[in-house]
Length: 489
Image 1 (spheres, rainbow, N blue to C red):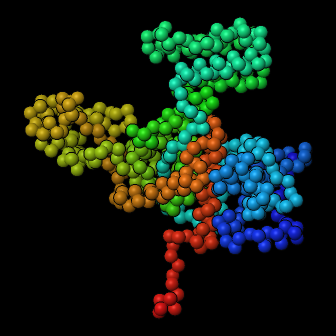
Image 2: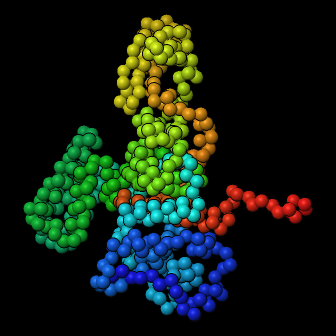
Image 3: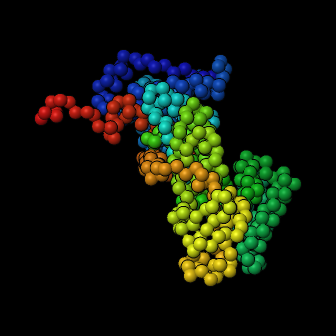
């Protein structure tokens, strides 16, 4: 049953908090300026209105999770802090005679909240910030950041071997007689029996499938632990990219070409001040550009209409540029190519003839569509062979010059890209704050959905801090005007 939140405190608690609380503190600023009453309205449907024992108030449990991420604590640590930390008890509305929820209660509340519930709470907080004038909303800034998985990455051969071993141990714990007949299928395939890694992996997959079929035939996986391990092994078999038995949804991705990570990506859109407007989490190998349109649509669904969008070159795609222009958003996205614009290299385009001319005056002879949009424009092999610039213009793997041309990119290239890239640094500051102070650089849990809840709640913490600073007049970037006496002095 839904537990009601009582904002009133008794006389003893009021006197104790009044004497022991600090005069100023960021948590007190958040408590005074941010209204979290929308939590109960959003989560009331998750509880029965009149059946069962009264639960802890949803707003109180949310404040505990908020405090946990704000101070970068675990479930157990935040419950320990609430036993003696006066400031934390005050923020979470826990009196000195009230019971403190245990860590299991927090786990169940987080499960009940889920990814969709956390996303709705973020939307409500953004709407509140907009009503109080804390948002600018002229820009939308897109970026993604890596989140390390809460599991070690391993080769899939090792993952399958570990899965069979754990599954056999779970069966042996419940039914030793059935496990004895399946011990041979739980053993690893000898490495020397196969010529390469691909054939060894195929043999491991076949042995794993044979073990699962044998368990189903003997009905030996009915125990709860065996059932859980079997589900994990099946997920690894279904997806060849899985690199961990504990977290089969995590994937290898790249922050840069020379820097890989194993885990997830947090895709975030902010305004020009770094205030998070929407966020979502994908496996680490997901392309940034594929999430861009969904994030922009989430922002527009909340009633905001940014007129400019700033992003890095990972979002350089003709389809995205055209979609943004159709929605009235001007994209400021640099090109992926290091060489820069074709005009800067000396190439010119004749729109009437639909031909490109190289710096030596030779015209292109044709073009073919590219799978990512745009065209590959070809020059004559004979002209390139005789060209004095061939050594520096044509790569060693080619026998003629080929350029990549995106008409949509050239058509939707506004001025002011350097300024837009300075605006884009706002989202990088937001990522830095989340990772340095609130533990967003590493997932606390296994699974994409649980990681998404962590990221969404962390974004709420960052937004609440920004709201408190702006409404309390403590924004360090805005200097207060000096009085006449100060100027005279």
